[in-house]
Length: 328
Image (cartoon, rainbow, N blue to C red; front, side, top):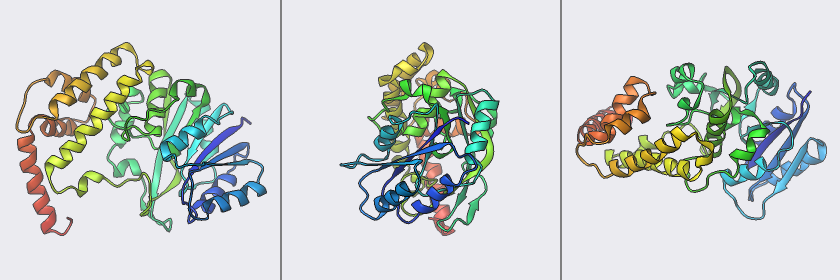
């Protein structure tokens, strides 16, 4: 039975951390090492972790001297991996007892380098809100269509807490990009492995993905809170612009074809962000970037980026309607 390192980043997680740790320690797959890095918690998280560390020799706890933030905290953990395989864990979820075994079996049986999967969305009391996060986010069709870089190139659909991967890829994954908050660790890990290895998707759900008011990353869509279309579009463009900037800065992991496309994409978003009404220039770059999207998303993105005058009007109509029915 291979050793698997489970990486757990914590910060002020005393409310849920015990439940999560118990679910990991009680897995049917026993040959694990749980590496925990606490990012200067101000509650009783560290105390609880230390108590577990004294009870179970499989647990190693690190205490950060200054706050790193969750991405750098996970980078710290990734640098501590010694096993041939590793998994990522959030501090507030619950793992079903055979999550590690099923994930490992999928990795070995499919002969791939990384496996990720779906999740059950639950509330803070573990009541099921939605049986499938991917159906909730409407990306399940995309998952069935692609299993290579095209799945992730434009938008992430890999949740870190579902990942099991080979540690041999860490040499090109690390260091993690740090110039943007829109390219977080799980996205980068999955994208790099997809570009340089093989990935499988596990449809079965072995995590209760807890949603509550203090989630660092969750299913909430920030853009739905905006009252003006221009704010939504600005965020939309900035996310893509900063990601492609990071892609260009870390081009070593990309094949030559995508290195060139990354540069053109960065130029494209720098151009398109200044369009206020309509522009039919650089449509060829738009097509290269979005041709693997669902046709509805393709059209929606085209209107948002190239015909903002139309998108602005449609957004205002939709916003008024949602306000009238009490959803805004």
